[in-house]
Length: 133
Image (tube, rainbow, N blue to C red):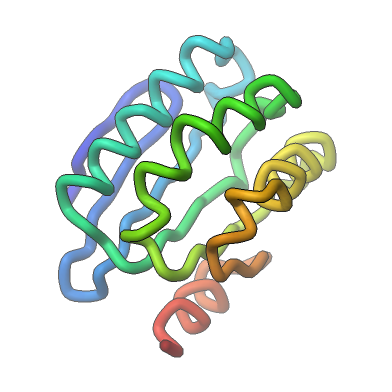
């Protein structure tokens, strides 16, 4: 079920698997910080509403680099909202190294470490890992 669609992100909920999928689109190349924050606030609201246990973060087309200020904002304003809801997070990583590094740095912060997480290069591998526990 599609919960939200914008130029930058599509949020999908799979009730049977207790998955929420946060799929970043290629238009993120033009994304501004305000746009990213708006999308993350919507995502946090959807997590609070649907209470998925697993998250698949689809970043293969993501072109937006999460700068340190925004990483801090994520750790202080977003992760705490769903840290007791989401148990496992799988990341499909982009080819763009800068975006990849910024995502990994965000998740290495203190709050991000509260999630069981893994990084993958295929959706099939990510889904299999998410379903393991």
